[in-house]
Image (cartoon, rainbow, N blue to C red; front, top):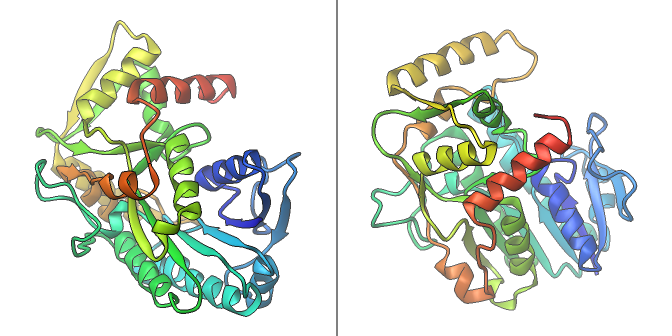
Length: 328
């Protein structure tokens, strides 16, 4: 069985490609001219250059594959239109290419995000898949728009949508700075109220994604993939502190108004930069939410998903990897 993985030069996609190889699948990975192939080098997989806005290159990428795992996407853009182009429109083009040149496609797996659903209202009511999506940012709205396009193809081929919560693990660059700061003995907490969230280690996310791809029960279904345990930021900072074995460690709380101020400044100066900033006012809105929590009961029931990496073990493994690679 041959699987196409988009976004395979990135954090999650590269781990998905590795796991598929370990399970005996043939793996084809897309890359762009500007992609760094460091995670794909010297591995028994096929790479193919493709552009999400070059239809012919996409047709070649998906030709005769049995499965597609679409993990590519845009996490930073200057406006909503930019997010739509990178997340919704790119997905539409991939779906159309699959319809044209992958006639026997067994599953289109779309990697979305908890932000497509939005935050929960309370600790007692985690978000579930049957709740109406209420995204609060441009990124989240673009991810739900992409999901809707995937569902529109249900009569062409079966799909499965997975919505990961915040992800961490080896190769991650998105929250790497938090570990850099913690190594210096400093932990930052957002606001003065407790904030709760699910995290997921990359190993758990990859395993859950492949389980969903292989499960007959997951046909035309949507699932949250996350830790089974709900954490607060105090627990996360303490786990990082313990992994570094820091005796002297200072925790600083950043008021919400200061978070928005920093985001506004970053967004303003980002207008003059080549690439849009990842941290902006929308991202600040994400940071100040109290309950980024969801239920994984549906995934547990339908295909046996289970969190296997504890927060403490996952944090230590991630830090050890950073150190081994000279990042820390």
